[in-house]
Amino acid sequence: MKQFFLFTTAFIGFLANPGFSQPNRVMDFFPEGTKLHGNIPYSNDTLKKHLLDIYLPPNASAKVPLVIWVHGGGWLVNDKYADMGYMKQTIAEIINQGYALASIDHRWSSQAPFPAQVIDINAGISFLYDQAEEYGFDTDRFALMGFSSGGHLASMVGLSRNDEIDSFFMSEPTKSFKIKAVIDFYGPMDLTLFPGAIDPKSPESLLIGATPIQRPDLAKIASPITYIDKNDPPFLIIHGEKDESVDPRHSQLLSSWLTLKGVPNELIIVPNAPHFGQIFDSNEVRIKVMEFLKKELK
Image 1 (tube, rainbow, N blue to C red):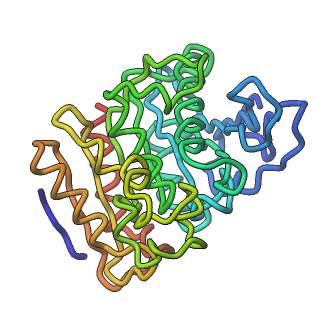
Image 2: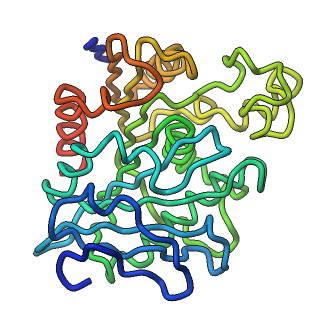
Image 3: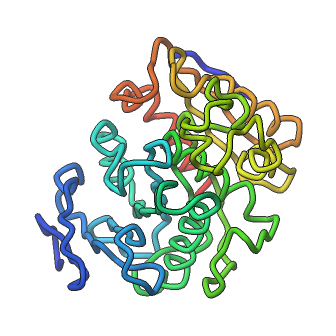
């Protein structure tokens, strides 16, 4: 473990599914020439939370690696555009370096309790895997990137994938995909670590339908560290030193468990950084993110 302190061409719109009219609010963040396939249903239903967006690099001449974006919001709010607003330079670099990016929306805990959110992310990835030929993805080079609760979900999916947990999947989607790497930005890793773990109105309690302290069995099932084993993908873990929403101990615990199991990982504690914001789009962090993607998706 290392720890550091620190369309046809470019549409200014989107290739929207005609059944949905949700506008894309973030296209301006992407480099000119980025090709967008927007509001794609991934689950054979009409739920607005079961949509994803695909952003393809311009002029790709071969199959491209894919970065799968999982938004934050305490499992209670936000959508597939969230967290992009303060990560603009990282997004641009991902596309400019020849990666595709897909952002998957998922149901909120107020709409469906855990594991609905993991089921949704797995369903979205299954769709991307099954449609890889159409969009030009290299199915051997899929990485997850999640923020806050999205970091939790990205880690859940990345760590549990090799455990073949049927309850984390819908009945139809393929389970053949593999995750080569995970980038976790300040995601919760053990639900019992939260100060609000005894509060029935806390986000983590609403996620599992009970307080983590009263139902440690449910909290364990919904905590990424439960699924760590030696066969898990490499992790890049990034957390703010002054995070008051998700204590850095979550990321430190994740890194320690990964290290004990022999899983390559790197923990970056960003000096004086809060829970989220443009500080995570700094040159120092962005360089680490791109080096990690280059190494693991080569």
